[in-house]
Image (cartoon, rainbow over all chains, first blue to last red; front, side):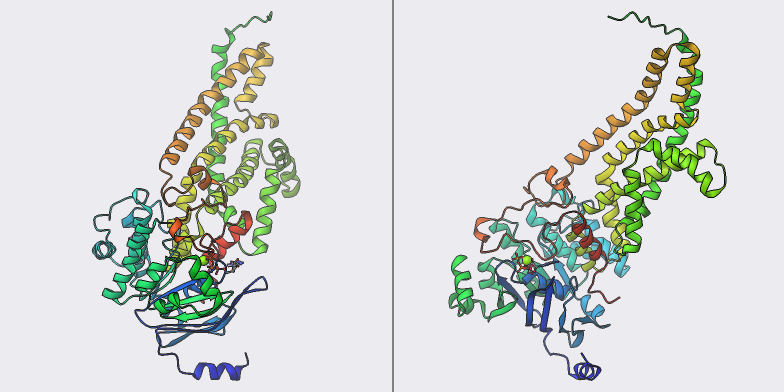
Length: 262
Length: 286
Ligand SMILES: Nc1ncnc2c1ncn2[C@@H]1O[C@H](COP(=O)(O)OP(=O)(O)OP(=O)(O)O)[C@@H](O)[C@H]1O
Ligand SMILES: [Mg+2]
């Protein structure tokens, strides 16, 4: 990009959306995994990403999280340009502070208790006192329906409980956006529904937004504000979940929906 | 069966000499263990560096010590160091240097295996909570790596203790050396070396018992961290492999079983690389 273009780029006002991704492109070893993907999210919105394996959902999530660097594309967050042409700007740090992420497996640090899992980052990063941390930890655990587990060992928790503690741990850093990558794929459906219920509750009570990769179509239909269907690195179809899932337009999504009909 | 007549009468008077030798054996062992345990850590870190200039020499060092006999290493240090440095080093410090150099290589590999066993997601989760690289190493990677490798570390200690007997070849008066002298003085090699063997055994055996006990404890507390019903302990111990997570039937869709970006099972160095780059996020402009 020339300096002139770059200057123009910087002058352009940042998006009004909570988060605005445009032209996100990513290749791994010469294979393009994301092709100029545009994606927006408003504050407190739940967006669900669906699509076949390898279609680029996790990659997009990781780019938003800053765990993977995009080759090209811009990201605006809360009115700031945080990524320009794939390059992370100084403003990125403050924006990233608003983002939490929940993974599919191994979410908790197993050698630490629930309390230590929740306390580590607030103590080391925010420098909060133990007293404040314990109070907040109790509140965060209550919020995910895990009150009274403050002193549990992680090994004693079930898979669903672990994911809820992982959400509580993310809440300790006061995120406004949670990124969840197949957070419930390893759980039995009723347990998965419980964990996903927490996400809906956080949206309604705290206004915390969420970008969620899931294969749980029941959840998508019920709780998502928007569903984006990924196909080979592009968002092939996007919109209201009920419409998208009942009257898919693209043949790919039609096939996908048929395969997972619930 | 045999016409050899054991005569244990010479043993009591030999014991003081043997114990003196044992003192030196323990001294060399303890010094080597302490130094190797400490120095293995920086070497492991160098071995995992993403800079080739650092990683390559560390790897070469480790392979040299893993792929040559310890006795040759001892002799080499004993004769080569004076030749290169122009100073004569007495036998005891010389063998301590050689044993430590060897031990450091093995400890480094053990630490590396331990650090590799920490799932990438745990490190990425820590990064997402904005923990610093140092905090991640100190509070998440190292404690788990160390805990997981305690049995291996203990068995390296036991091997080292036994391998110190090689220093007798350089005239270091350890328990084996003293045994050798005594056996030629008394013409009672069987009795003397049986005693020497018992001395080594009495020290090493409790340590191996302890190692097994630690191993059992780690196994019994090992379901932590992995999702429940995820394929058993042994699979989790295998480096670079993850347990296969059963996907509930209702959640199965085309592709539901796929791995996530960066979370796919990768083996060996590839996993290591991803682990290290994940300690240094590409996306972090800081
Ligand atoms: N670190 C990486 N190195 C190389 N290739 C990668 C890497 N991460 C992802 N890929 C490739 O990028 C493509 C998209 O992967 P991604 O994980 O984003 O897909 P996904 O939609 O999340 O799939 P799934 O539903 O299986 O999780 C895949 O073909 C994958 O092999
Ligand atoms: Mg994925």
